[in-house]
Length: 176
Ligand code: ADP
Image (cartoon, rainbow, N blue to C red; front, side, top):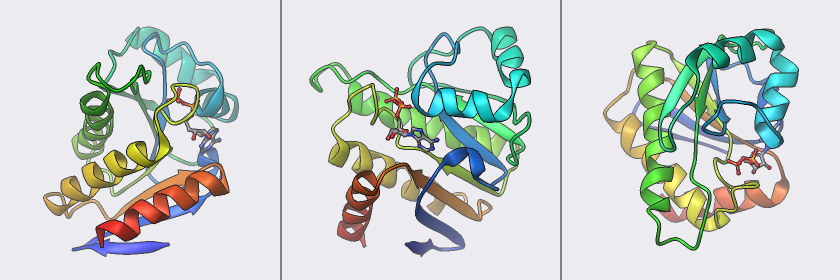
């Protein structure tokens, strides 16, 4: 599914983010930048050890922030590592932190003057964020940002299961 916000294409796709051909892919990292399971593990496996070497030099990343490394063996030239919140009921600033994770990642896209980026569903795996709410925050944050950043040509959400894809699609349809 694709839609246009001014000059920017927003696309939803079902698949594995490590195979994306956008300028950058976003990693749902942990604050120690140590790698792990889920999408983080998949990106380090596919991208090779240079990404972890760069992560070690950077050291850490607070929740809601984002840092950049090269893409190693990936097709994407950069990996933007952001840290979404662990969901603990919703009253511990989770929504603001999730919004910030998307926004800071987009700011790194702007800093590097990139034209395209792919996002996974940040915090929607082991960090336990309720899917509908996570999708709504993800989509509204990105749509608002690209309205003012028409130099970004393509933002893709690469969703790993049909269920997550369907939830994102449903939320996107409500917004248009
Ligand atoms: P978090 O710790 O932020 O919850 P996870 O990696 O556990 O991060 O999950 C985030 C989302 O990434 C989940 O929806 C999960 O299904 C998805 N995911 C896992 N592997 C991949 C992959 N290779 N490509 C895209 N998404 C993936």
